[in-house]
Length: 525
Image 1 (cartoon, rainbow, N blue to C red):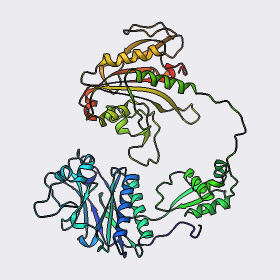
Image 2 (image 1 turned 90 degrees about the horizontal axis):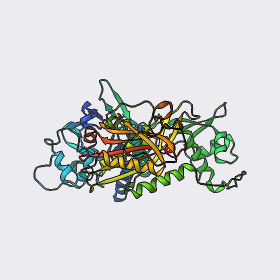
Image 3 (image 1 turned 120 degrees about the horizontal axis):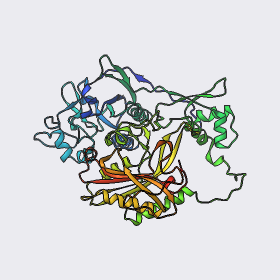
Image 4 (image 1 turned 135 degrees about the vertical axis):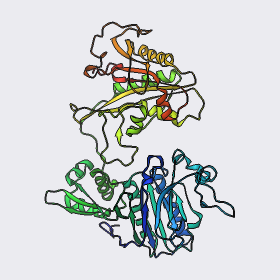
């Protein structure tokens, strides 16, 4: 409606409460290092208000917290707490408390017992099960508030009689934790009449480390109004762009150089790039006002050769009994490299401002994603035969963008008797499908077991693939030696048992990965 413009300002009272963070929460054996907190006062809660709070909490758990893995929220009755608070870890088999919903007398369950027997504990047990110690938020009197990210304590249950709320967000990265807290605090300020926010002092975990949360100050950003107009295809002047951004609750000011300096509200977790501000300009302008128009040039559409090649590969693998999976192109070093027993290669595109600690780089091969898929399906029947056709990205200084995308094919087979001969048969079927000759040579690369892996060097096209590992005729083009990089067009083998152990896979696994563009003759380097 445009009745309120510009970034909203939120008053934040001085802190009266400290949360002391123990260094143990950052230990790899009990890893949940970040916490941010706030106090909400002055509001009157009824059943409807409680529903608002709980619904907001669960929506944020799903949307930003990635089902509590990246961030989880706790809401408590502050009057049931004895200041100050301690965020620490405890022994899961010795420490006890009564979780939310526990009723009646009797000894409170242990932390591990909560994971095994409480409904919420069972639902989210995978987040803590492998940790040596579990995170606990408690007050100085030893009364437990919660076991993040699983369950709150019954003693701090929020009811319609609650007048002061204590809110905590714990998680893996400070950015996600802080933004989540900002969203819930600002939402409560706007939706609960009379609500006021008070900061909380976070002390530690390092010596002398202190900070106040939440930080509700707007974040600075810039956008080029001329670029916004070009992207949207409409005539929007710089001053009009400023007004549209103000309607979206940003502070915006036109700078002398023609760019717009923007102050983004603290609750806008989704503003990561100038294009996000261009999207806000489009929303305020109105999508219905953007008139579709025909492209001035005329072309005849057709299937791209790489897509035809990909469909051919999919048809082949499905015919061999494999099931297609699709894994995420964004991954992280721990899964992509360290679990495979290798160091990062330096060939990967890395994300400067990752939204999640699980999305810090673009994959350079498909095999780690297949291993992760097999890990997630260890409870399903064997054998498991999966494949993927997808893009990988490698740094390339000669490319216009500094990186190039390659279309790859990968497949994996997990079974009690899976061995080298099984995956070699798949390799020969692929080479036969593309009418390629190849010679095989030993392949020493992660994640394969030494002496149980091979690479295929491609020779001439047009004849059936060579079998039994016999050397092919000399290649007519440099595809066989992979160009200057020496990268084979296809490699396969048995996965090292040490790698399988790190992934928690108990049965043998064989894997294969191939460069589809080189197999199909679309690229010789």
